[in-house]
Length: 126
Image 1 (cartoon, rainbow, N blue to C red):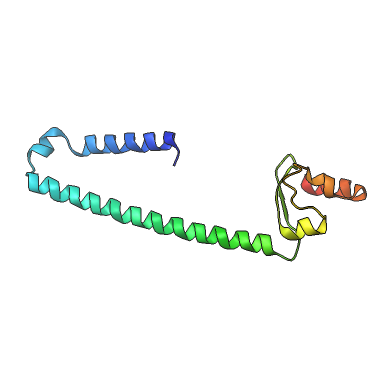
Image 2 (cartoon, rainbow, N blue to C red):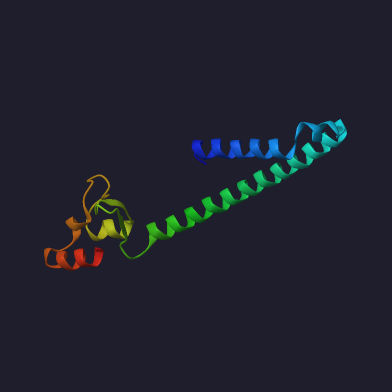
């Protein structure tokens, strides 16, 4: 989460707590009641933290799986940005065009497209 978002979340929590617990509300509760409530919130945060860790592990596993599928695919794949600069290419693409890696050259995808197909490619991109 970005710092701006974290600051906003902290402010929302502070506002919620201020509105929920006016000073007279706290005076009516015993220390034991406040500690019990705090313990409940703590347990909920622990649960959410564990859930976030599990989700993070699942996402990392999926990322690794799909990266391996991309890299090991028998068909050449290339990922390029809106400026048509190559961001990534798999092994089959590099073998097809006899390059060790396209990232070293910082090339545009149009470099790999036959001149007769340039117009068709640009039409397809648009």
